[in-house]
Image (cartoon, rainbow, N blue to C red; front, side, top):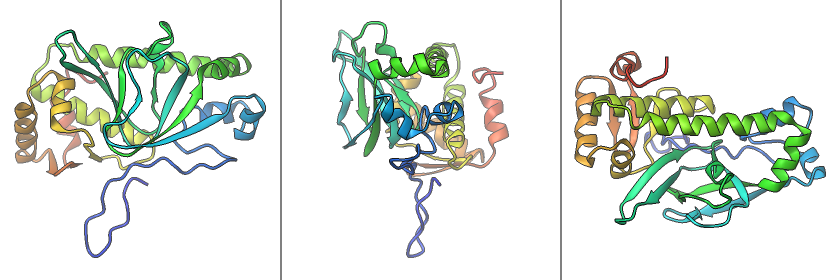
Length: 253
């Protein structure tokens, strides 16, 4: 999983798709699948609880899953592709809050205000699962682990956001960013030391608080040092241990 079959001698292309479920079973990367199954509730059981998982999409590049100011009604789990969340400041400048991969949730930060506080934009062709929040809250009364999982993911989002504002060098920020993406892909069954940067360099720079030229320059330096290989948007880690050493002041213990 994670690479398409190579054809005609061409190199296989990284293509993270988590669409391996059906009407009876959860996708392997489902945000709540393991929690529900672990408590004896299968996908058919969710139907009986009136907590239908709705598939939405495809969303094309630039399409919005939701917009800042929309009334909150659902939490979304990325099923395929990559989604970025962002806000626009008073001067009209975009501030990227995060990038979300298959199996990850978006919309949790709207629970308190009941208004989505950011845009969620497709960076490539995206499929999502829509979880009605009222239905999800009802399910949480039946399976307390669902509520615990929501809180866990919400607190992780807060922790990830605070990581960005730490004082660190460009090398440290980019190394930590790449390793974080690799770890998230690996946790979902994809290749451990390879990833596709579906977001443009300018978005990575925005998220890390760097200039786009700096991101490109640091990637070249990492490649020249033998830490990784970059081919277009495909990145292969060649020396993860040394890359972790670069990012040691940012990565969690």
